Image 1 (cartoon, rainbow, N blue to C red):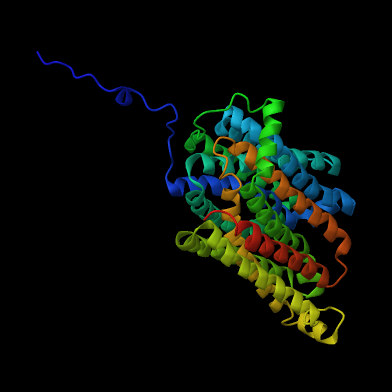
Image 2 (cartoon, rainbow, N blue to C red):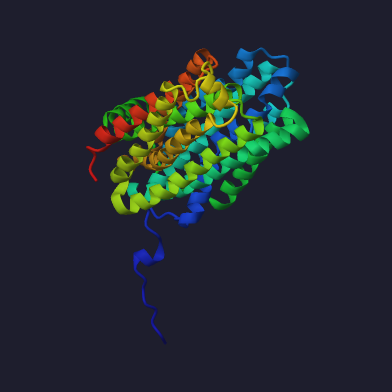
Amino acid sequence: MSRSVPRSPQAVAPAPDARVRPSTRGAAFALALLMGLQPVSTDVYLPALPALTRELSAAMPQAQLTMSALILAFGLAQLAWGPLADRFGRRPVLLTGLALYTLASIGSALAPHIEALIVWRTLQGASMAAGVVAARAMVRDLYEPAEGARVMSLALSGLGVLAVVGPAAGGLVAAGFGWRGALALVAAFGAATLAWIAWRVPESLARPDPRALHPGPLLRNWSRIARHPGFVAWALLVAATDAGLFMFLAGAPFVYVDVLRLSPLAYGAAMASAAAAYVAGTVIGRRWLQAHGMVGAVQRGAALTAAGGLLLAATTAVGLAAAESPLGRWQGASLGFVPVLLAQWLYMLGHGVHQPCGQAGVTGPFPHAAGAASALAGCLLALPAFGVGAWLGVALDGRVQPLATGVALAAAATSAVAWTLVRRLPR
């Protein structure tokens, strides 16, 4: 009679913190969907905004509030979703947030008046924060910071594709089915993302923290995170480069169409080319990450960012795109947009390098509090975007100068952070 050989405990059960690690491409695809919630919520919606304003008889401040309320709710809600993700895990937060996001998107498409639309868009912003917070935390759960930056870079390449397709898809749907059709498209994206995450994405958090929601430990955690040099450096880097991005998103329609006389079709092509430059930046960034690490990649990306800011400032200074000069009027009708677009390409190339490094860097030092770190960083990143929208609403005056000044300041801040605070971090 044969004797059975006892198995070791390790062969009987997995380690307590064993997790199912998805493939790199699978993780990147899921992250692209989750991080893409934000551009889909804004870019697909923007082409329908004028028609929405007319049909609902909304005042311009009310129409703008449908965007700014979403952004502000998105930033503040991350402070709640982050600790919840540390306490209960990433997957429950993702499923809850995506279900609410889909519901809010459907409510937005069916809103009978502008006040209801503002409420639904606010809920939409608060719920999509769950996806972005959990996505950043999942990267830290599964990868060390340098590897996480490469995975995030791959994911943000996919996000760049959404940024290229989103405005065109929103415009086509709005033309055929009105503004409600564009918002229904956003709801469909939310439902598809929810289905994919429920089907394919497992839990990534090894050990939920039962004290994550206790006020005392939570406040001490945030205080510790906020004082960490690595968090400060990476969060400020992403906040600064995001500020320049939102300058372009909020100001470019008025500058390209109203000042530089581009047709709506040409404006769409210009923005699509800028999104393609962002995708190219993520590809360049992955190569620099491999060769130089996160700090080295950011140093090089900052040169592209600075070049974009300087070119745009110089363009305005010499009057090549100034609406009030005869040369500017002539070029506005022909090639005056070229230096502005070249500057935007350079800035977006740098942005494609900074974003993956910064998104992975903010959670890197906190493997056991990645949700809290992601939430604090997300709140800090959303506030400049809200401020940019408010400032541009007052500053835009029929010239390129306000956009150029804002982008140049954002480029200078991004480069300064990269060449000082980030440079001092361990390589």
